[in-house]
Image 1 (cartoon, rainbow, N blue to C red):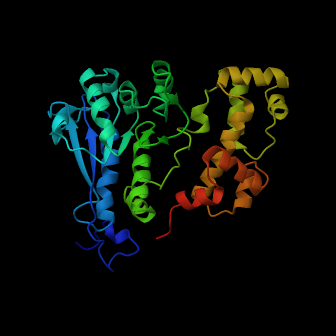
Image 2 (cartoon, helix red, strand yellow):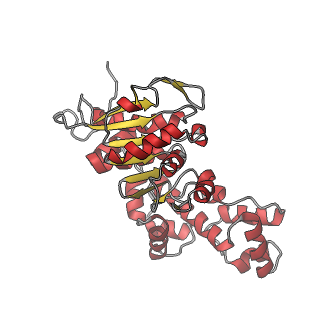
Image 3 (cartoon, helix red, strand yellow):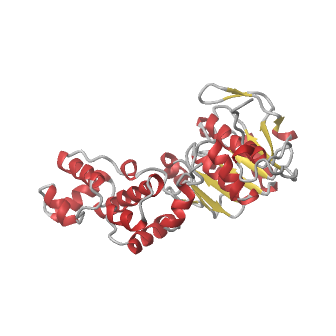
Length: 342
């Protein structure tokens, strides 16, 4: 059909040749009642799209789903998913994917037992959102660093002190196990795995087709500075929070912010922390980093201009902040996230 665009037409080699069929990697997705549907379908779309992106009609990944008894499951949003197998009959996968959802609260002993016995056979174990709760219950995260949805990190850490729970990143890799934060972070992790398996070009093509950026680094924060902090109850402090967000290049020292709130620096710092859950300095760091990220993603402005507009003053100061918080330089961040011009 004229005007139809597929994965292959987005590739730099489109029209010149087709990629040779490659050995498939099997991805097995575990299903259970009250699973989060996007935890399943997000990564599945990424893995299925990888074959089309490479021009491989057989698919780069063989995606299969399985529930305990092989019967249909109902997701937390009301969709019904029909699995390919019962878990007992499922193939040993290259990648075992355990999604999250309300169903993880039940900790079905049969499912936990299956994971404890069979998951280690996979070359790679992946969880999305509260799927990490199931992995932890099966003992698979003992002694490892992991993450989950920010709202459940404290619960996971309290229930499993043997797991090093990091509430900050959108995904964490520790050996053969990768855990990701809430819902859409599963797409980021799946893209990272495709890039690892098949290369950046394939992952980038899938990301563009799904209209997402390739790719948020794993140590990128789960949410923005404004969402990470609580909104202060007292009006002067709320106004200061808003001022910081709107004026990242201004003088945002504690003394200056305290004067704006008409409080002493000591009283201001104590009250700000009590009401927002973070210190003024940390809040300013987050706002400036987020402002710089958005300018790198959305504008062609130079790093020097962005560093000044974001309150860093110099490109070197901004580079140090990016490396510390995101593990990457501003230039590399822009390369990954600024959309290409077609």
